[in-house]
Length: 132
Image 1 (tube, helix red, strand yellow):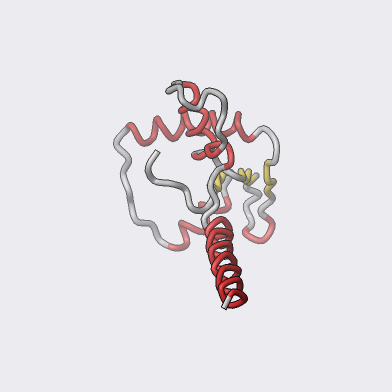
Image 2 (cartoon, rainbow, N blue to C red; image 1 turned 135 degrees about the vertical axis):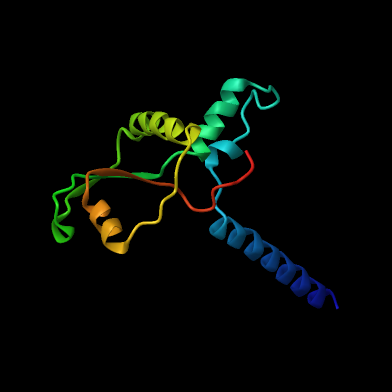
């Protein structure tokens, strides 16, 4: 009976560990927001801003140079200087969304043609939390 209880205990521990590790695999969360610092008990405005920046910031930025041909559209993926591009993009997006944006349906050809133009594409991470 003692051996059976040991097996049951080990099996239970393995099941719990697999659930926890699977949860971490499928639902990643920003590491910086989970770190417990020395000043974690203080409600610092700067800490909230830093946490929001870590959560709501693009993971990659793609700059398209708009050559004019769908097959030869040259682009680059930024790996450095993401923060400055994101800060400048926020100003443009804020001005757009604080105005009165108009959503107009377009034809497929117009959409494809717009994809060829010079542009900056901001790609955000998956599983972005909705409550901040």
